Image (cartoon, rainbow, N blue to C red; front, side, top):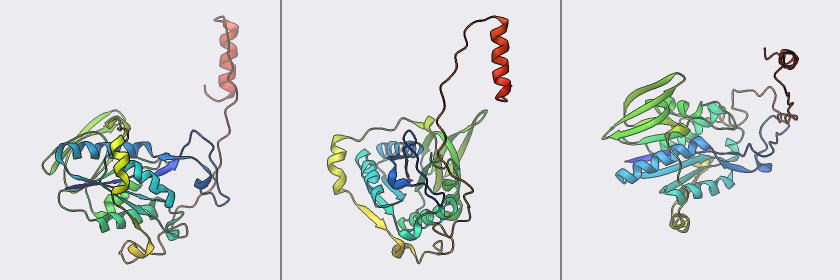
Length: 266
């Protein structure tokens, strides 16, 4: 049994966000982190590994520096890592990204008792589309928004979060599960794991390694093959200083109501 975890290196949105003239993010000029929801997916996989002894493989698509993020995942306890990186893949939208990642996961191999895990969504896009699209392209059953997992043989019981409650679903492996922050608290890298990380395999899948896969079509990958058109991208303006109103009299209440009405809040 193995668990394949798809993770993504994303811009640290607490810092400055830079946008290229073509509307894509200028990732090279920004600090990066591992996408938070993906960390929950990785922790879920490592918890299953702790209980069963299975293998955990992390995979990401991105530029060469994303290898550093994969090394961090190996230091946390993952066994192997795969970096999917090629100029031909650059600028891919969610559709093209899922094509490429599905091909990479298929090359790694998904067997009868395997699980594919992803974070719910990435903070640089907030689409929550890539995980479900990978499942569809690999013909795997999927359960999204997992807030609790229990594995029993080839059956996984998932407590799925909804807007107004929870849904409990049982799914057989192989399957794909997307995870949310309520699922767990990701562990830190261990000292031993940091020492061992460079002894663990990290393989790179470039265009040459994947080009013969049926899902890899030059017309449906990369920026030119992405059906999503960006209308406008921009750095949000910083919020101005707040206003403090003091008092509980009628005049203060009327002033507050007038301000809220002008902002179309009431």
